[in-house]
Image (tube, rainbow, N blue to C red):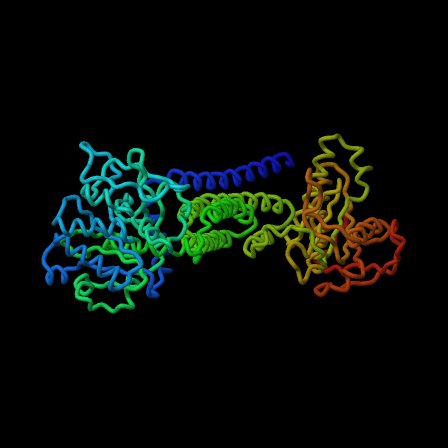
Length: 621
């Protein structure tokens, strides 16, 4: 039995930790090789967090000059004369004192000579950043328009992303450009723009992203080149809402109608929101927005990083979050085995909620960590470990009930189940009433019988003792050869335990009387039963060793009841009751038999017996 229990325990633990390991491996698998649909949901949850924390405070470092539909109506359709574009840049730099200007426009074809020349001079000598579009999708034939400019920034420690094609400015403009940046990107599988390449590698040259080039094109105020801790692309933080950026129509700038304070000292991005020009993208904050706003978000984030306003310790936080997620799987399994089913569910829900809180913090820290992978792990635990523990509980329940069914009456057992007490077998101090019954002269009688007859007599006699005990809701402690020990008051509290013990004793006497009738008819000698009853405190519960244990009681009252049963041979009555039990008897009349010295304990105690009703008196045998 001990070996079976140990084996079941080991199997249960192996299953538990196996489930925890499976949940952890699933987490790592989803982190490393996320399916497309899973990645889509993961990014969607991240977008929700970004929208929740986006700051609507006006961004006073960046300005957007929009060649909008109204400007096109007032000044003419696109493409504008190159000289008008040059006018727009000159007005921003000279009249409005902008810090730097970035043109989110590519000019692959030459325009009017004067305008191209002026624009080339501005690109050579002024803090003006031109744009190029790099294509990151292999095509046949590859995309190749215009002439690539010289790279404007060193790569440093930043990663690069291979480009397979490009749309650049015409040769004279590209050759003059001092600052140039890439406005091409790789959209996510759901079409949302979340990342941009830090550097696009084309051939042996590497070209910075547009926002990076713009921020570093305004000496002597240009900040040092940041180390953006990314794999191949930079996740744009999107820390500001769309409304946080000031947008001024290009026509108002050219007409000098815009407030000077809204332009001076700012990084200016010139582009178009006109639907006819088609520069629209989807971002985590907006389903459809002008591409200029994506560059504006990037500029704001780069200024925050370069200026020390924010720090994104993504790598360290990502490791800590991963360690927490894995550790929480094993801790959950450890605690679930000690909790109820509903407690286990609440624990996993709590861990999921706590992870969402940590993930929310991780999003603000630019952590490249899956938000949903740990939740999937918790879901796996919910679907596996909780049913496993329920099955283990049911198995243990059945084991405990099977154990108790040998000791307690069926009504008591059913009450235990109803009250949910089946597991409460931990030894506790209880007030109980003990009954010890034994056959007088057992050895002398059985020695004269054949072995089979002696065994049958013993079995039948013990049956006479057991049935009354269980019939009166007693708990069978153990058999002692030709006798038994039983008690009342555990595992269920019994207010009338002494009376029930007395009633069981009277029933035993009656059963033995009927047993003797059968004995005489079979030619065997009659037997005499001796019974001792006493009450008192005792340690009751599942006692023993890992090799063998049993539900039993230990205390002085058991010893006293046994001594009373032994002393009964010196009295004409078969039933002796101790003083503590006698004090609790309510339904039966008792009479004193004086005091006796109990052997082995050196104590004199008063003894009593029951005034037996006529219908319980034994008939002469």
